[in-house]
Length: 127
Image (cartoon, rainbow, N blue to C red; front, top):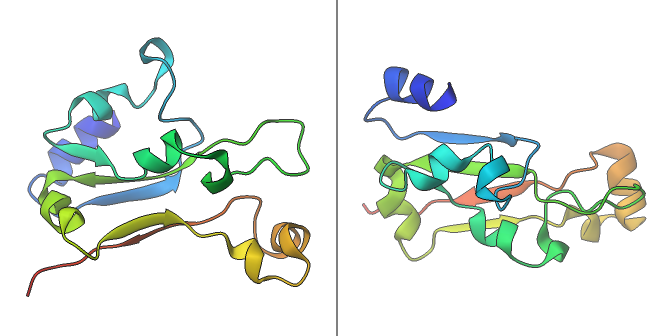
């Protein structure tokens, strides 16, 4: 439904979909709710895929103080109109480990901000 909505209402525009999508990008194909986007790589790219496939130290939901394991739930999906910009030198996507800037570390960050880390995007556009 989301693919249809984007295709119908936002064709040929620079589109960035961000959010806590509450599922993993690297689930098996049989249970991957994002499979239609992942397989449609001519039109869509989860630019946080390397984070999802990388070290759990950089996942957006670290699972600290929880009985659940860490996961990467917070994603950034772009449409093909932004592929070139994301490919430019200087473009970057990363999990921002804000807890490292709090005196009380994760405890203070979770208490005052969120139990998820933000995933940030910087796109370099050519002049």
